[in-house]
Each structure stands twice: as C-alpha cells, then as structure tokens.
Length: 279
Image (cartoon, rainbow, N blue to C red; front, side):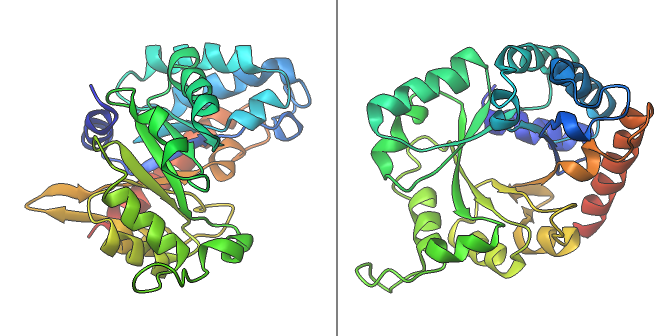
C-alpha cells in the first residue's frame, strides 16, 4: 500500500486524526528509566503498544535517537511498529534538505535503512533536493511550509516580490506542493497548529494534500481550531487529510511506572477531541 492508502486506512480503522510523536528524552523518562539512553527503545515501544489503536500515524524524531547514539534502537523500534501496528504509517521526522546526490543518500536512510512510510523535508534548496525522495513509489514527503515556531516568520511569512501576485513564501511552497512539484501525488505539507488562520490559507491553496500539523498539546495549539481550519470531507470521504501531532503531552503524561497507561489515556482524550471537532 502507498502512504496515502495507509493514512486513509488508519483514519478509518482507528477513527483518528492523532499522530503520536516519538521524541524520547531520557531526562524526562519515568523514574525507573530516567537518564538511561539504553532504554529509549523500551520506553518508545511501550508507548507504541499503548497507543497503536488510537493513532493515524507515528512520528519518530530522528534527532532524539541520534543524539544518544541510539540509531540502532530506532531501527528496532521501526520493526516493532511494523509488528504491533502494521496499519499505522510511520513518518520519519528528519527535516532533511540538501542537494540531489546527498538527498539520494538521505532517501536511502529514511526509506531503506529505517523503512519509513514518509519523511519530513525542508524545501529551501528547491525541487532537485526533493525529487530523489519521490523516486520511491508510494512513499510520502512532507515539506515544511508554515511551521509552529515563532522564528518561522523570519522567512515563511515574507513576500516574494519576484513571483506573480507576490505571495508569502509559505503560500508559494503550498502552491508548488499542490501543483508542479507533486509529480506522483506523494507530497504533503507541515503547518503548525499555532497558526490556524494559516492552516486555513494553506488548505485553500492545497485542497487535497495531507497536512502534518504539530503544535497541539505542549506547544499550545488549539485542537478544535486546527481541525476546522484544515480538515475537509465530501460525501463522507476525507478529501483534505490532517495528521495532528502530539508528542510531549502523551509521552510524559506520567512520571511513574504507569507512564504507558497514562500515555494511552492522553492519546484517547486527544483523539476524541479531534474527532469531535470534525462536527
């Protein structure tokens, strides 16, 4: 199945728009695991098992593994997710962005080494930095568009005087992703939940692309406003998919031995909140 097929299937089967972000920080682990980077896999595997039927996707953030020399644990975790939640696609949050020959190597890393279903990318270096990922049939690629951090304004919210209509940079990225760059229907966009008005604008420009929306939970994004701004249906079928990520609020819902059960409760709460917002 393609990434889009898996996404649609997980949305139906798990009745969910929630993406569970896997950003393991050993300093924040529950007491019996705290500070032990060798237990990253154990912590994340427990979270995955607890939330496998609540999620539309899982999103491991590669830096949280690489910083602790835990890439082997990430490989093991990817295999574990395939085993316990084969219906849930995995988005490798790597935000890669480099020239073609280097991008080819990063694509091998994401799709062959780790077996991800999709990856996050920076579009700053242009289409030839994105194209190598699109040679992997059925895999997804999410381009950073309007991110949730305050510094996103420095570039994303600036006008392009040399482009017809003088769009903001993030609007131009959305148009490229919906149009000429989306050769095989594989692209999506990253839009932060902290900017619901911009989510709505991106949805106008990219009516059918999946939107990966971080910022709900610890970053303060409004889940209801997020869904209303970005989620679209027609005739009961999803036409504008959204993948709403929550990481810290789920991972660290409890600092005790019940951390996995607490993560499940928070995931269910967030999933149900998102579902209710669909109206």
